[in-house]
Length: 457
Image 1 (spheres, rainbow, N blue to C red):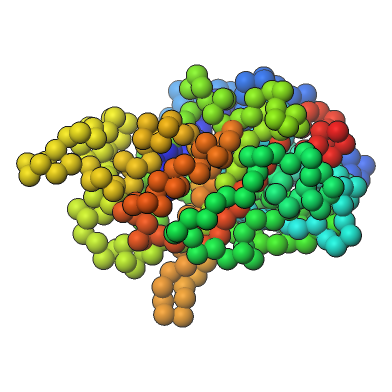
Image 2 (image 1 turned 60 degrees about the horizontal axis):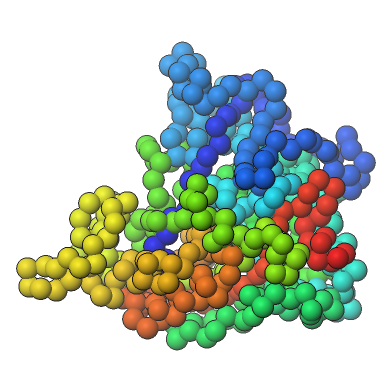
């Protein structure tokens, strides 16, 4: 768990009136997509939000909040309402109306603000399925993802699970695992950056819950919308691919905190300070594969490392507050470094206590993961917490679905994890139980499906 933050929400507008809920598929030919002009620019494509006519800005809405009874949550721009009778009809808030765009320079779900609910899934191509079947599947998946992200029903056999809901900031992201290329006869197009991750001493990996030919990331601010997308994509797989593994995650809902703040994990720690931001001058170079790409089909794409990290909460919670802070190197309440200041204050690695010992311990997690201590390695973390019940002895099966994005995992994730492997104080309180590395191609242009440049190139 590197010392980097989750992306911050950035949409500027929300609807001023009730937005239409998820429409049925009957208004369109089966399998057809509803074409909409994209308002994304090359710089923000795939990460912006667009809304129908009749919208007002957040600033105007804030200015009229007292008159309308609307109360805006600062984190993620969620809007709530004052107490009202249970039978009073309420319009969609921005929680339901927020929409990410499917088409763009990059795939959605990378720079978008992390959502409250997430699903990760990996699929393996069925026996006998190859490049042709994979192309047909990605075409189906892209049509379905575009419709669902627009708040519409699935193109066929919709389950009505998300009926009446708006888009709810739904994002769907697709990637290819190392094994995909041999299964489809595309070995020559497999990127060298997709070579298997090295073994780490902290790994206790379950191979049945690791890797896979195809990877899907789903995020939404409504649990039913997220599940609806998962179920629709699973049904779309048909006989072409079978589910290999699937994991569920969650974060705080937008508006749950009084002001925007870095997320907390299940250890209670502020988790993710100093994440690279899209506004950083070198953000694109660090996170996305530059054009013309190497290989070419990966231009504007990224690499996702996925790790299921179990937190040994019973052991962690036995530690005193002071001991927990020494393990991390930051104050639990504020995220400020032990050397002083606020969460965003630069950590002073040279500062000593009265006894001459470093104020930030040498094996503190935040010290070890600092980019300037790892050859300027950068990762964009976009994680979900998970809780999958309890073991027979009552031990919680809970932790972090760690997802990090980088232009090259050999320069991003690997060097940091190797250094953590050699002496991170946090390592005795976590266990890496599943792992995957996936090549995520750039976004699909209008009329394209994700991965088309690989599968038809």
